[in-house]
Length: 137
Image 1 (cartoon, one colour):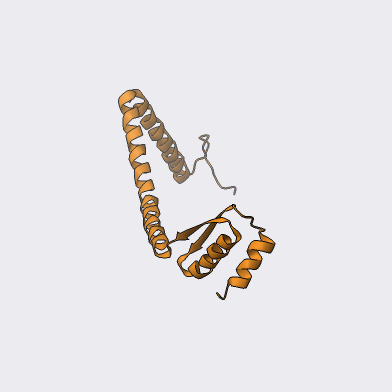
Image 2 (image 1 turned 135 degrees about the vertical axis):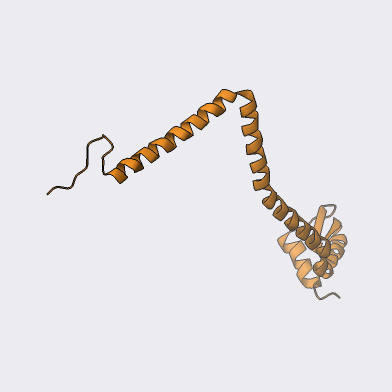
């Protein structure tokens, strides 16, 4: 008599109410094979048709480790691919419309020129509208 026999019999007959000719899948890991075998034995005794499915623990953890490495590699490569794609898109736009590239550069230079003019005015003590900014005496 197995140490699990009473427990398994109670689960199958009272809780699950398994009937003869019923198909039942018993799934377990390596460390749960003893109780899984008892379930299969008791299911056959009832007249059910059991199938024992064992998930190999070592194989599962090896797969989990390999997938973790793959996820880490993808996580590191995504920004690199993103940068390559941005450079590629910019190059394609430059080839497609060189005028657009020139206009973007002009806009950037104009913005910088305005910043420098404002800084110059501030250093000379003038306001943005051209009037002198003198302290009150």
